[in-house]
Length: 239
Image 1 (cartoon, rainbow, N blue to C red):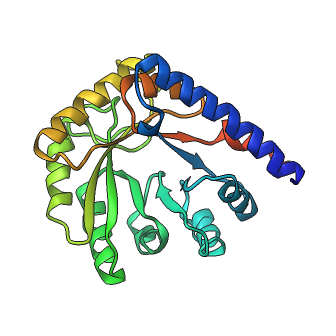
Image 2 (cartoon, rainbow, N blue to C red; image 1 turned 120 degrees about the vertical axis):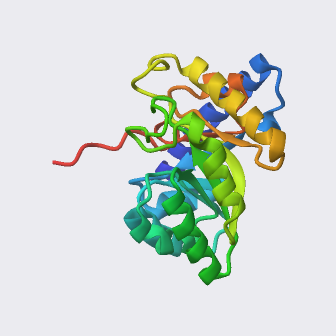
């Protein structure tokens, strides 16, 4: 095993232990939580090593990094998640490789994703990114629709050819009533998911939690956690 592969294997094992322990504490089965490894800024060679170590779900947040990396790993059975703020001029590229876009937060983006998915002959999974720091009718500082905009956006996805509504995603907010209250934020997201699933039972994916707060996310009921640093390490600053 190469040095980098051994490092990744050790880090994955630690993360796995954390997820398993969090599931035990929450009275959940380990199989209820999917690990998504966020490979942003890391090379395709790391993605290939992660695949060898059993990882099947990977995430990226910038198309300029993701597109060549996905192409270089096209022979692997990976599920690609796009988790960054997405501009409409990048939609066609993202739709060519992403299986799930976790950052759907406005009707204009829904329209663009639908057109690109239809043209590519693909069905694209969509998570509505919820900004728990956003005022009514506004978007969050890091993207995301305000909670009171979920229903309207969900209806837009429902009506859009080529798109499939899979659930909700959030990032623990840095401002607003949930700043510094990650568990409360994730609990609120679960309440919003429960409301969404009342009319759309298949939209049962809840993506929340990262390296620093995966335990709180699992305790709240997240089905997917997005882990970068804890698996890949802290990337040295350039210069």
